Image (cartoon, rainbow, N blue to C red; front, side, top):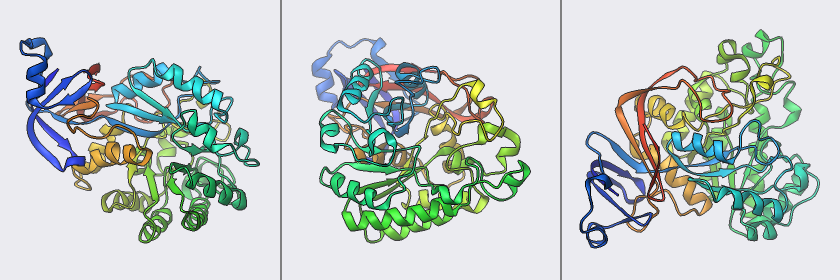
Length: 423
C-alpha cells in the first residue's frame, strides 16, 4: 500500500509535513524499500491523501469489552469493530470481567481469542483476587501470561496498606498500575456530582473530595514505592492540581482524561439522564476547564475512553439503579478534535501524542508512531467533512452523543497494513 500526498503528523518524530507513506508486509518502509518490493505496484495499492491527515493509529488504554461473562453488552469482536470505526488500532482492556481476569489461564484465554481480531488487543489483570481488595495476585505469573499492567478498575482499593504492598511488588516489574480513584466515604449515590445536578434528581451524589482525597493518598504511596501509576478518568480540578504537583518530582505519575469529562458537565444529567451517569461523574464547568488545562500543559498524558457498554434494558432503569458508563470508541477522536483542537486548546500534534504516542509508551506497546519499521497502524482523517453519529458498531448504544453531527470524518483505519475501516 502507498498513501500519497497526505499531511503526516507523527509526534514521536516531531513530524508535521506533507509526504507519502509506504507499507510492505504490514510495516511502514522507506520509499526505496517499497520500490524494491513492488516495482510494478498497481493503482489499487494507492490511497490519494490530498486534503487528508494521517496519524498513528489511536491507542486506547482504558476500554471494557465485557468478555468474558457479559457479552450481551459487548464482546471482543464488536468492541474491535467499534474501535476501528473510531480510528483506534490498539486497545488495553480492563480486567473487571465476569469472572475478573485474576489468573494466568483467564488472561491467556482472552489474549488467544483477541489475537483473531483486526485490531491489537492487550489486557490488564487485576491487582487483587476477584477484585475484592483483600488478597494480592501473583503479579509476575500474570505478566508472564501476557498482562501488560494491573488494575481493579471499577473499584477503588481502599486498604492503603494492601495497596502499598501491591505498589512495591508491581514496581519491580516496570509495568503500570492504573487506579479508579473514588473513596466511597464521600459518595451517597454514585454517578452524579453532588450539588445542583444531584438535587434535581433528589439525590446527594458524589462529592469531588471522593476523587481528590484518594488521588492524593495514592500519589504519596506511589512516590514512596516507585511504582508507575496511572490515575484513571480524572474528573476534578483538585485531582488535576494534585497530579500536576506530584509530577514535579515524580516522572512515574501519569493521568487519563475521558472525552466525556472534557466535553460535558454535570448539567448534562438533565438532558441525557442515565446516559450521563458515569463513575467518576461529570463535574462542573471549572473542573472541565481544569482538565482542558491539564491536557494542554502536560499534566494529563492521555485521552482514554473508558468505553463502557451497557444494554438498553439496564440503562432504562431509574437513575440510582442503572449502571454507570457510556460507550466512546467511535466518538473519542471526533470529540477531541471538536472540543480541544477547534478551540485551540491543543494542536493536532498534541492530540496524537495524547491519543496514540503517550498511551503506547506507558504500556511499552509497539504502536504510536509512523516511523519507518513501525507497524502500519494508521488513521486517516478529513477535517473538511462531517460525521453524523447515527448508529454504533458496538453491541450497545449507551451514548449521549448518538445523533450528534461532528466536525471531521475518519476516512480510513489501517492496522498491520490492512484497511479495517473506511468511510
